[in-house]
Image (cartoon, rainbow, N blue to C red; front, side, top):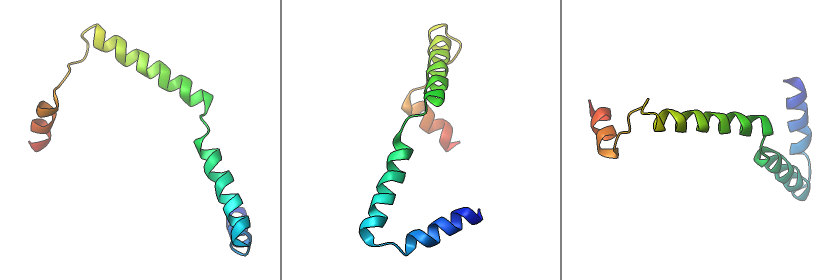
Length: 71
């Protein structure tokens, strides 16, 4: 964590334009999809769809969900 604090400390002393470049690069890096996570989500979606089509799960309407939450 000390490396993180050091980076932040140095970044705080940069010119606004330089800070902007760093912020943009960091935000962009967070928006990039992770292929491993995408694969896991695809598998989960397929599993849920299969459970739904085989009748293994019950579908609830929005009003049913609201009623259950009020209890």
